[in-house]
Length: 338
Ligand SMILES: [Ca+2]
Ligand SMILES: [Ca+2]
Image 1: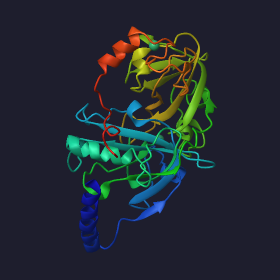
Image 2: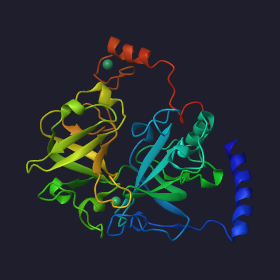
Image 3: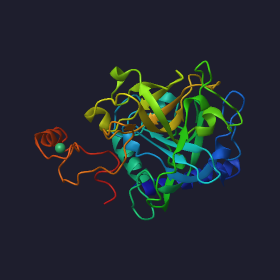
Protein backbone atom coordinates (compact mmCIF):
# COMPACT_ATOMS: atom_id res chain seq x y z
CA UNK A 1 0.00 0.00 0.00
CA UNK A 2 2.61 2.46 1.09
CA UNK A 3 4.91 1.54 -1.76
CA UNK A 4 2.11 2.27 -4.22
CA UNK A 5 1.71 5.65 -2.60
CA UNK A 6 5.46 6.15 -2.84
CA UNK A 7 5.45 5.32 -6.54
CA UNK A 8 2.69 7.83 -7.12
CA UNK A 9 4.62 10.25 -4.95
CA UNK A 10 7.80 9.73 -6.91
CA UNK A 11 5.94 10.40 -10.14
CA UNK A 12 4.50 13.57 -8.68
CA UNK A 13 7.90 14.52 -7.32
CA UNK A 14 9.52 13.92 -10.69
CA UNK A 15 7.08 16.34 -12.24
CA UNK A 16 7.67 18.91 -9.50
CA UNK A 17 11.45 18.74 -9.52
CA UNK A 18 11.55 18.53 -13.31
CA UNK A 19 9.75 21.82 -13.33
CA UNK A 20 12.35 23.17 -10.92
CA UNK A 21 15.17 21.59 -12.88
CA UNK A 22 16.28 18.31 -11.34
CA UNK A 23 16.00 15.41 -8.92
CA UNK A 24 17.01 15.91 -5.30
CA UNK A 25 20.79 15.60 -5.13
CA UNK A 26 22.23 12.78 -3.04
CA UNK A 27 25.72 11.70 -2.03
CA UNK A 28 27.27 9.01 0.12
CA UNK A 29 28.95 10.82 3.02
CA UNK A 30 30.78 9.87 6.18
CA UNK A 31 29.25 10.72 9.55
CA UNK A 32 32.29 12.94 10.07
CA UNK A 33 31.43 14.96 6.96
CA UNK A 34 27.75 15.18 7.83
CA UNK A 35 28.33 16.34 11.43
CA UNK A 36 30.68 19.27 10.67
CA UNK A 37 29.89 22.38 12.75
CA UNK A 38 30.80 26.06 12.83
CA UNK A 39 32.14 28.04 15.80
CA UNK A 40 28.64 28.14 17.32
CA UNK A 41 28.17 24.40 17.01
CA UNK A 42 25.68 24.73 14.15
CA UNK A 43 25.85 22.08 11.41
CA UNK A 44 27.36 23.23 8.14
CA UNK A 45 26.75 20.33 5.75
CA UNK A 46 24.61 21.41 2.79
CA UNK A 47 26.32 19.89 -0.25
CA UNK A 48 23.34 17.74 -1.24
CA UNK A 49 19.60 17.50 -0.59
CA UNK A 50 19.86 13.90 0.64
CA UNK A 51 22.65 11.77 2.05
CA UNK A 52 23.57 8.09 2.26
CA UNK A 53 25.24 7.04 5.51
CA UNK A 54 26.23 3.65 6.85
CA UNK A 55 27.31 2.22 10.18
CA UNK A 56 26.23 0.21 13.21
CA UNK A 57 22.81 0.66 14.90
CA UNK A 58 23.44 1.49 18.58
CA UNK A 59 19.94 1.14 20.06
CA UNK A 60 16.56 -0.52 19.68
CA UNK A 61 14.25 2.38 18.82
CA UNK A 62 11.36 1.46 21.16
CA UNK A 63 13.71 1.64 24.16
CA UNK A 64 14.50 5.28 23.29
CA UNK A 65 11.19 6.79 22.08
CA UNK A 66 7.66 5.42 22.29
CA UNK A 67 6.32 4.34 18.88
CA UNK A 68 2.74 3.90 20.13
CA UNK A 69 0.42 6.09 18.00
CA UNK A 70 -0.78 9.23 19.73
CA UNK A 71 1.68 9.15 22.64
CA UNK A 72 3.39 12.34 23.74
CA UNK A 73 3.60 15.72 22.07
CA UNK A 74 4.99 14.38 18.80
CA UNK A 75 2.80 11.27 18.75
CA UNK A 76 4.48 7.94 18.08
CA UNK A 77 8.21 8.39 17.57
CA UNK A 78 11.19 6.32 16.44
CA UNK A 79 14.92 6.99 16.66
CA UNK A 80 18.09 5.03 16.09
CA UNK A 81 21.72 6.14 16.37
CA UNK A 82 24.18 4.91 13.77
CA UNK A 83 27.88 4.97 14.55
CA UNK A 84 30.50 5.31 11.82
CA UNK A 85 33.16 2.64 11.44
CA UNK A 86 36.97 2.70 11.20
CA UNK A 87 38.24 6.30 10.76
CA UNK A 88 34.74 7.75 10.54
CA UNK A 89 34.75 9.01 14.14
CA UNK A 90 31.19 10.34 14.42
CA UNK A 91 27.62 9.12 14.36
CA UNK A 92 24.15 10.24 13.32
CA UNK A 93 20.65 9.94 14.74
CA UNK A 94 17.83 8.90 12.42
CA UNK A 95 14.45 10.24 13.59
CA UNK A 96 10.80 9.71 12.69
CA UNK A 97 7.70 11.26 14.32
CA UNK A 98 3.92 11.36 13.89
CA UNK A 99 2.87 14.98 14.44
CA UNK A 100 5.17 17.14 12.29
CA UNK A 101 2.54 19.89 11.99
CA UNK A 102 3.14 20.73 15.65
CA UNK A 103 6.69 21.79 14.81
CA UNK A 104 6.08 23.59 11.54
CA UNK A 105 5.98 20.53 9.28
CA UNK A 106 3.65 19.80 6.39
CA UNK A 107 1.14 17.62 8.25
CA UNK A 108 0.54 14.71 10.61
CA UNK A 109 0.37 10.97 10.08
CA UNK A 110 -2.83 9.19 11.04
CA UNK A 111 -2.31 6.30 13.44
CA UNK A 112 -2.69 3.87 10.56
CA UNK A 113 -0.18 5.74 8.40
CA UNK A 114 2.25 5.88 11.31
CA UNK A 115 2.07 2.11 11.80
CA UNK A 116 2.69 1.54 8.11
CA UNK A 117 5.72 3.86 8.09
CA UNK A 118 7.14 2.35 11.30
CA UNK A 119 6.74 -1.11 9.84
CA UNK A 120 8.80 -0.07 6.81
CA UNK A 121 11.69 1.46 8.74
CA UNK A 122 11.86 -1.43 11.24
CA UNK A 123 12.47 -3.96 8.45
CA UNK A 124 14.98 -4.44 5.68
CA UNK A 125 13.02 -3.90 2.43
CA UNK A 126 15.01 -6.59 0.62
CA UNK A 127 14.68 -9.46 3.12
CA UNK A 128 12.04 -8.46 5.71
CA UNK A 129 14.67 -8.82 8.46
CA UNK A 130 13.83 -6.87 11.66
CA UNK A 131 16.61 -4.44 12.54
CA UNK A 132 18.20 -4.45 16.00
CA UNK A 133 21.12 -2.83 17.79
CA UNK A 134 24.38 -4.22 16.41
CA UNK A 135 23.24 -4.48 12.78
CA UNK A 136 25.21 -2.70 10.08
CA UNK A 137 22.88 -0.66 7.88
CA UNK A 138 22.76 1.96 5.17
CA UNK A 139 20.34 4.88 5.43
CA UNK A 140 19.29 7.09 2.53
CA UNK A 141 17.34 10.20 3.40
CA UNK A 142 16.94 13.92 3.83
CA UNK A 143 18.45 15.62 6.87
CA UNK A 144 17.81 18.54 9.22
CA UNK A 145 19.89 20.27 11.88
CA UNK A 146 18.40 20.27 15.39
CA UNK A 147 20.03 21.47 18.61
CA UNK A 148 23.59 20.42 17.94
CA UNK A 149 23.30 17.52 15.51
CA UNK A 150 22.33 16.92 11.92
CA UNK A 151 19.68 14.21 11.98
CA UNK A 152 18.58 12.12 9.06
CA UNK A 153 14.80 12.46 9.02
CA UNK A 154 11.86 13.49 6.86
CA UNK A 155 12.44 17.22 7.37
CA UNK A 156 9.05 17.12 9.15
CA UNK A 157 7.27 16.55 5.85
CA UNK A 158 4.69 13.76 5.49
CA UNK A 159 4.82 13.57 1.69
CA UNK A 160 6.27 10.23 0.49
CA UNK A 161 9.16 11.93 -1.31
CA UNK A 162 10.59 12.73 2.14
CA UNK A 163 10.65 9.10 3.33
CA UNK A 164 14.03 7.72 4.32
CA UNK A 165 15.07 4.12 3.73
CA UNK A 166 17.04 1.82 6.02
CA UNK A 167 18.72 -1.15 4.34
CA UNK A 168 20.64 -4.04 5.86
CA UNK A 169 24.35 -4.34 5.08
CA UNK A 170 25.32 -6.96 7.69
CA UNK A 171 22.96 -8.57 10.24
CA UNK A 172 24.34 -8.91 13.79
CA UNK A 173 27.65 -7.24 12.96
CA UNK A 174 27.99 -6.47 16.68
CA UNK A 175 28.07 -3.27 18.69
CA UNK A 176 31.19 -1.12 18.25
CA UNK A 177 34.10 -1.35 20.68
CA UNK A 178 33.30 0.95 23.61
CA UNK A 179 35.34 4.11 23.96
CA UNK A 180 36.19 4.63 27.64
CA UNK A 181 36.09 8.30 28.59
CA UNK A 182 36.59 10.20 31.81
CA UNK A 183 34.55 13.28 32.62
CA UNK A 184 37.63 15.54 32.44
CA UNK A 185 37.69 14.79 28.68
CA UNK A 186 34.25 16.37 28.24
CA UNK A 187 33.96 18.83 31.17
CA UNK A 188 36.47 21.55 32.23
CA UNK A 189 37.64 22.48 35.75
CA UNK A 190 34.50 24.57 36.21
CA UNK A 191 32.30 21.58 35.27
CA UNK A 192 31.36 23.28 31.97
CA UNK A 193 31.01 21.31 28.73
CA UNK A 194 34.12 21.26 26.56
CA UNK A 195 33.16 22.36 23.04
CA UNK A 196 35.75 22.08 20.27
CA UNK A 197 34.68 23.14 16.79
CA UNK A 198 37.30 20.85 15.21
CA UNK A 199 35.54 17.91 16.95
CA UNK A 200 38.95 16.36 17.71
CA UNK A 201 38.50 16.79 21.47
CA UNK A 202 35.70 17.39 23.94
CA UNK A 203 32.04 16.53 23.63
CA UNK A 204 31.79 16.86 19.84
CA UNK A 205 34.36 14.09 19.38
CA UNK A 206 32.06 11.57 21.05
CA UNK A 207 28.68 12.77 19.83
CA UNK A 208 26.36 9.96 18.70
CA UNK A 209 28.86 7.28 19.70
CA UNK A 210 28.87 4.50 22.25
CA UNK A 211 31.00 5.36 25.29
CA UNK A 212 31.76 3.99 28.74
CA UNK A 213 32.33 6.08 31.87
CA UNK A 214 33.82 4.17 34.81
CA UNK A 215 33.71 4.74 38.55
CA UNK A 216 30.99 7.35 39.01
CA UNK A 217 27.97 7.54 41.25
CA UNK A 218 24.42 8.73 40.72
CA UNK A 219 23.85 11.76 42.95
CA UNK A 220 20.06 12.01 42.59
CA UNK A 221 18.68 8.44 42.71
CA UNK A 222 15.21 9.81 43.48
CA UNK A 223 15.01 10.95 39.86
CA UNK A 224 15.33 7.34 38.62
CA UNK A 225 12.61 6.15 36.24
CA UNK A 226 11.80 5.71 32.54
CA UNK A 227 12.38 8.87 30.48
CA UNK A 228 13.89 10.67 33.50
CA UNK A 229 17.35 12.21 33.83
CA UNK A 230 19.86 11.44 36.58
CA UNK A 231 23.24 13.05 37.24
CA UNK A 232 26.55 11.23 37.68
CA UNK A 233 29.60 12.59 39.50
CA UNK A 234 33.23 11.47 39.41
CA UNK A 235 35.94 11.79 42.06
CA UNK A 236 36.94 15.26 40.78
CA UNK A 237 33.41 16.56 41.32
CA UNK A 238 32.64 16.81 37.61
CA UNK A 239 29.06 15.90 36.76
CA UNK A 240 27.20 14.75 33.66
CA UNK A 241 23.50 14.23 32.92
CA UNK A 242 22.32 10.74 32.06
CA UNK A 243 19.08 10.53 30.11
CA UNK A 244 17.29 7.28 30.90
CA UNK A 245 15.44 5.65 28.04
CA UNK A 246 12.12 3.85 28.25
CA UNK A 247 13.43 0.28 28.42
CA UNK A 248 11.41 -1.72 30.99
CA UNK A 249 14.46 -2.07 33.26
CA UNK A 250 14.01 1.47 34.59
CA UNK A 251 10.66 0.39 36.00
CA UNK A 252 11.60 -3.12 37.04
CA UNK A 253 14.87 -2.40 38.86
CA UNK A 254 16.00 0.14 41.44
CA UNK A 255 18.60 2.79 40.69
CA UNK A 256 22.08 1.27 41.12
CA UNK A 257 23.89 2.65 44.16
CA UNK A 258 27.55 3.26 45.01
CA UNK A 259 30.34 3.48 42.44
CA UNK A 260 29.18 2.21 39.06
CA UNK A 261 30.12 2.28 35.39
CA UNK A 262 27.85 3.53 32.60
CA UNK A 263 27.58 2.48 28.97
CA UNK A 264 25.66 5.02 26.91
CA UNK A 265 25.18 6.85 23.66
CA UNK A 266 26.85 10.27 23.89
CA UNK A 267 24.14 12.70 22.80
CA UNK A 268 23.54 16.41 22.40
CA UNK A 269 20.32 18.42 22.62
CA UNK A 270 21.45 22.00 23.13
CA UNK A 271 19.46 24.61 25.04
CA UNK A 272 19.42 26.94 22.01
CA UNK A 273 18.90 26.55 18.26
CA UNK A 274 21.57 28.95 16.96
CA UNK A 275 24.31 28.44 19.55
CA UNK A 276 24.69 24.74 20.21
CA UNK A 277 27.60 24.30 22.59
CA UNK A 278 25.80 22.74 25.56
CA UNK A 279 23.13 20.15 26.25
CA UNK A 280 25.42 17.13 26.04
CA UNK A 281 24.22 14.03 27.85
CA UNK A 282 24.63 10.28 28.08
CA UNK A 283 21.61 8.29 26.91
CA UNK A 284 21.12 4.81 28.40
CA UNK A 285 18.16 3.11 26.77
CA UNK A 286 17.68 0.12 29.10
CA UNK A 287 19.05 -1.47 32.27
CA UNK A 288 19.17 -5.15 33.21
CA UNK A 289 19.45 -4.70 36.99
CA UNK A 290 23.01 -6.04 37.31
CA UNK A 291 23.94 -3.44 39.97
CA UNK A 292 27.42 -2.54 38.72
CA UNK A 293 27.08 -1.22 35.16
CA UNK A 294 24.21 0.99 34.01
CA UNK A 295 23.50 -0.82 30.76
CA UNK A 296 21.54 -3.71 29.30
CA UNK A 297 24.15 -6.38 28.66
CA UNK A 298 21.84 -8.05 26.19
CA UNK A 299 22.63 -11.61 27.23
CA UNK A 300 20.66 -12.44 30.34
CA UNK A 301 21.41 -15.45 32.56
CA UNK A 302 18.88 -18.04 33.63
CA UNK A 303 17.51 -19.63 30.46
CA UNK A 304 14.10 -20.18 32.07
CA UNK A 305 11.16 -19.64 29.68
CA UNK A 306 8.55 -17.47 31.39
CA UNK A 307 11.00 -15.75 33.74
CA UNK A 308 9.80 -12.36 32.60
CA UNK A 309 11.59 -10.26 35.23
CA UNK A 310 14.78 -12.37 34.99
CA UNK A 311 15.13 -13.12 38.69
CA UNK A 312 15.85 -16.77 37.80
CA UNK A 313 12.50 -17.97 39.15
CA UNK A 314 9.16 -18.39 37.38
CA UNK A 315 6.49 -17.31 39.83
CA UNK A 316 3.59 -14.96 40.44
CA UNK A 317 5.68 -11.83 39.84
CA UNK A 318 6.22 -12.97 36.26
CA UNK A 319 2.56 -13.83 35.90
CA UNK A 320 1.50 -10.43 37.24
CA UNK A 321 3.66 -8.67 34.68
CA UNK A 322 2.39 -10.95 31.95
CA UNK A 323 -1.24 -10.27 32.93
CA UNK A 324 -0.69 -6.52 33.15
CA UNK A 325 0.67 -6.43 29.62
CA UNK A 326 -1.80 -8.88 28.10
CA UNK A 327 -2.70 -8.08 24.46
CA UNK A 328 -0.32 -5.13 24.21
CA UNK A 329 1.28 -4.75 20.82
CA UNK A 330 4.46 -2.95 19.84
CA UNK A 331 3.73 -0.38 17.16
CA UNK A 332 5.66 -0.94 13.96
CA UNK A 333 6.71 -4.48 14.81
CA UNK A 334 3.49 -6.38 15.54
CA UNK A 335 1.02 -7.39 12.84
CA UNK A 336 2.97 -6.01 9.91
CA UNK A 337 5.36 -7.54 7.38
CA UNK A 338 3.46 -10.84 7.28
CA1 LIG B 1 27.11 18.91 18.12
CA1 LIG C 1 10.85 -14.38 37.56
